[in-house]
Amino acid sequence: MASVRGYLHPKTATGASSLIPSPPWRYSGDLLTVEYRTDPARVRELLPDPLELAADDPGAVALIWADWQSCAASGEELLDPVRSQYKEAFAVVRCAYQGRTYTRCVYIWVDKDFAVARGLHQGYPKKLGSIHQTRPHPYGPAPRIEAGARFGATLAAADRRLAQAVVTLRGPSETNGFVNGHPMAHHRWLPSIEKGKGLALDELIESGAASFDGGQPWIGDADLELFDAPTEELARLEIREPIAAYYRQVGVVWDGGRLLESNTSGAE
Image 1 (cartoon, rainbow, N blue to C red):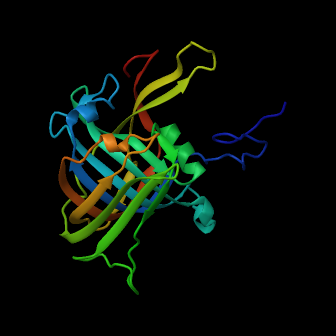
Image 2: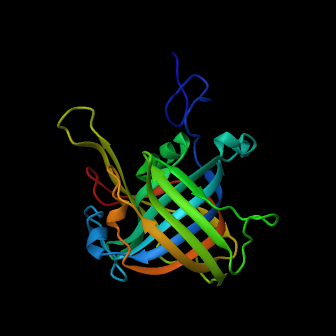
Image 3: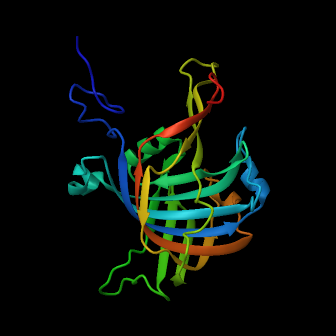
């Protein structure tokens, strides 16, 4: 009897065509983070039940650009860079569930299909976009990681620019910000194939790094702009008060999450 293999579609006799391999997934990346405050009501409208606003600083937002290299356990993708390199930009807020503070990604854009697939599995609302950020380098005109260094970042989707930032580093920091500093509370949703039957998959899950290491964080100031677009709503998280900007190089391993609630089984 024939069988097919692969972690995700397309499943084949060998599994080699699967869009993504099985976890653990390993990441090395440069993160550029801009934190600011918006109207807490705009955050609340993005939090489905049973999530609530965070008790402290409920309007805090982080817009993060990331330049990644990623791979599965074998690391073979690193030697085939088209399968490992991608960029993303995402907006995160903080929320509360049963008295605990979580981070939630409310918008995210990536530039590779395998990153979309991984994100949908993890509960990230990933879409395709065009993402660019200045890369540091110890030689030539590129900025070094030092006081006074300036980094640019842009985000576009469907031919419209959604955000742009210029970050100027001031000096070393004890943290890389606070908005993205908690486990993630995400939903995994999949509509039923039968019309009118609602959701076939409806889970609230907790997710985070199985392991993490990182270089020295740097703090700075940002000039951030958000732009309206016909099919995107990032600009609804309007900038009311800048907080700070950060730069950090990190390494992360993701190896699964934990079910918090489902529409059929209740809280775990």
